[in-house]
Image (cartoon, rainbow, N blue to C red; front, top):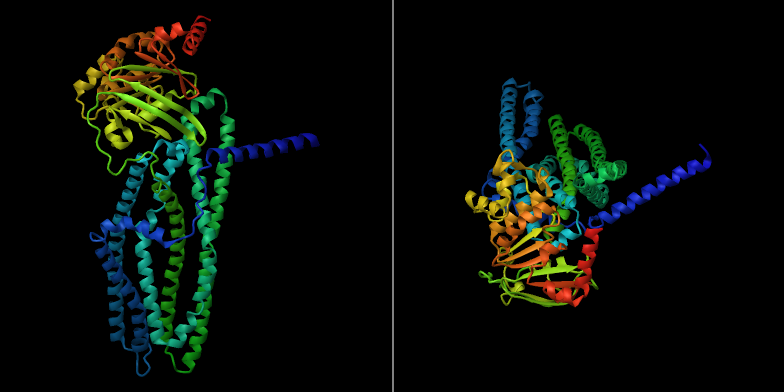
Length: 620
């Protein structure tokens, strides 16, 4: 290979890596490391989820914890007594009776300790799982209330990771971490008191290394927390990419882009692996620091302890007791180091969880919002101005008055504002200026549920949930009977194709209804809307995915569906809009024409041009 080819190959790899970095930053720009200082207020906020169980299980857990800790603290003292009073007493011969007594006492304490720990672990696991359940439920419930703007800027996979992986990362903290923390702190305090009481000088000498250990380990605190935040962010991006790949697998294979997808996944997997290795390496530094500190402390113990024995200020039993307590001292210190690392991991996840929990819906209800009573269906758009991005208005002073029972067709080029009008009527967004009125009431003054329950919408991209055909139709009204579900399907001409399926209405369909054709999915969405019986009905390109033969069959169904309802129809097909009471023509966020089909055709304006273009396209 020539030098030029090598350089070109290296340049291609560098360019590919740069493109991957740009793609990653663009797609996941919302998912950055949260630069917030470590604060205990957030830890306290996390532990508020344990409050419901403080009276049910916590007293028993604490009792078991105290019992287990006391027995653990008592055992080295008994070893000391056994040596000084039974094995090598200061004066006299070894006392076998006392030795057996102390051995039996130790055995009893070990049994009590085992039983206490067994019960403690069992009940802490129960509490931990309940807390994780509550936290995940609270997060999901909150996300359900967030507005469309929240989801517009976040990949579905990123949201999914917060509910699954980030909540799971807190499991160890709640099941074992909290109680172990309390237990280890009690044990440490108990050991320090005992050692200083036994021999103040020796106790002080062996503890001199502890402050040095905390100074060194605290210097790593911030680096470790940000490292684990980075790991969570990288994992979130991988999950987002996986979700995107699975959803778009047909497009990927149709354009033969599997290799590029694999390369990009390899790139993301590599940086995730590096982030994990970095965080893990930082995390593992606690162990060696504690081991080194323990080794220094042990050296001081035996060196200074031997001096005190020679000076007859210390007995051999006391030295052995000191050694046992020192061993028991560094064990909880090591666990506390691991606990601190666990806390840092939990903080990285909890910050991401609370970032979502602190999101406020951009479309919210007023404190005094009232329930919207059953409506007639009058709709007014009063001087509406709306923008998805600041200083880029999508609607510019839209005013429209619709009477109950009228059908309104919205037409115009892509991006003219048709769907935006519908989004404002459903209150998926709120206008920057102006008002949307239903039966003369500003929809911002009523509860969102009472509004949307009286508005039905059929989209071009019909979403079919996992479950049966019957369940998908009943989604429009969950308390509907089987007979009502079937009547709705018959009214929209869906009954025949449903009965041709293996199990009829009980046929299981997977997510997005991939076993059904586009036309069949649309018919199910019509049945779902009819069953909901809304006073205002929105058809957003609802017949765009239906073939001509199927469309002819549902025209009569549409008459049934639209009868007596205020309807808004977004469509390009002439057959769908020509019978509308009023056709509103939009262009760049403004209403440029308004009237029925015959009036607009006679006017020979924008609408006439759209229809002529459609005819030329169909006849070509």
